Image 1 (tube, rainbow, N blue to C red):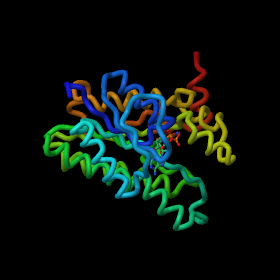
Image 2 (cartoon, helix red, strand yellow):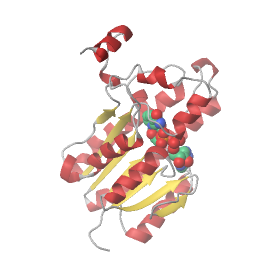
Image 3 (cartoon, rainbow, N blue to C red):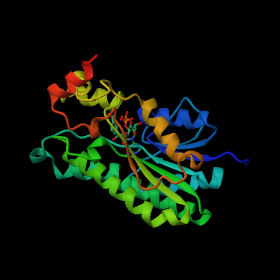
Length: 253
Ligand SMILES: NC(=O)c1ccc[n+]([C@@H]2O[C@H](COP(=O)([O-])OP(=O)(O)OC[C@H]3O[C@@H](n4cnc5c(N)ncnc54)[C@H](O)[C@@H]3O)[C@@H](O)[C@H]2O)c1
């Protein structure tokens, strides 16, 4: 093995995870990916499994160790959406979303973090959401999982930062991916609901999120950034305007 850095990415078969894999590969990282569906189209150690399943995570970690001997970067990206009024959300839906979006990242942080702590270096990036920073109606399990993921990020950052392992989160706004297609096909919202609310008047593209991940992954660019939850949302989380003010501010000459 040469000096190439190794990045582990969950949920890399499509969407944000896939674009993150492509961007990190362009930056020279060797890749290991886990997804519940097969990952094709780029070179990587590819493992089909469920991030919320402890046995799958252990087998994946062992495969990464056997192939590369280490991981420099872990990106916890795999996640699922769930749209339903709080009063109609079942315990089963709640548990599944918390399992995938929060317990999965915990298991992966713990497994790879232990090894990073031994080596005294590493960067973990958790893909949270603006729904981890504020309430968005009809997403009680999802919002709670993402608020929890930011709590996990901050806690690990303070426990592990002094031992060389940085832990940060990225909080995307609405991103054009298969997840968005699926959510919109249920009739939950349409494009203009989002674009009229975002100060920058557009959806994020997976590339916008991947570039922020690459920044946080790289100690040369973000070596003293630890424990942050970075919105990549075109200004959504900063905006306290009411709707007519937001739209008039956007169209001023
Ligand atoms: N799309 C958005 O608008 C948006 C906004 C904010 C945050 N996010 C977050 O970004 C992340 C990626 O979202 P996306 O839009 O690319 O989603 P996506 O649904 O397009 O892709 C998610 C990927 O994760 C995989 N995955 C799902 N559950 C898994 C599991 N249990 N084990 C292994 N792999 C699993 C899927 O197979 C898929 O390849 C998610 O955590 C999501 O919550 C997305």
